Length: 135
Picture 1 (cartoon, rainbow, N blue to C red):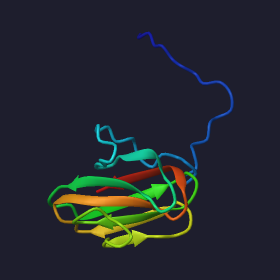
Picture 2 (picture 1 turned 120 degrees about the vertical axis):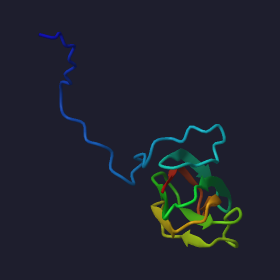
Picture 3 (picture 1 turned 180 degrees about the vertical axis):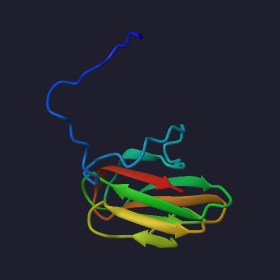
Picture 4 (picture 1 turned 90 degrees about the vertical axis):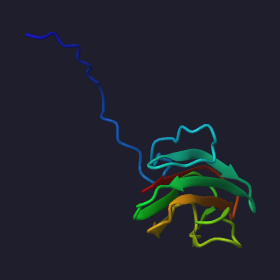
């Protein structure tokens, strides 16, 4: 017979956070450059004032069939921009999601191998936003 140390949680069960309400969409990226995104991770607590950007980049390997970029949570109104060649802006992007609030998603089919660029633009000042990527 084996001895076991067991932990029992007492009290009401905790509900998981509701997606889009500040819940993390992916684990935090660990690279030292806070602009760098990576496969299956994100950055939280992103903020910018109206008319300004929060910039990000990631490296996509060869053979990737799809790239999904998601922004969620926080306050204000951040629009999501993507470019496969240079920093994404309102005037220079290949895809954008500009709905009200911060629930924004972009999907890029068959992205080329190399660096890709993402930005959140402050349609209104925003804060506490999470941005993540998966491929």
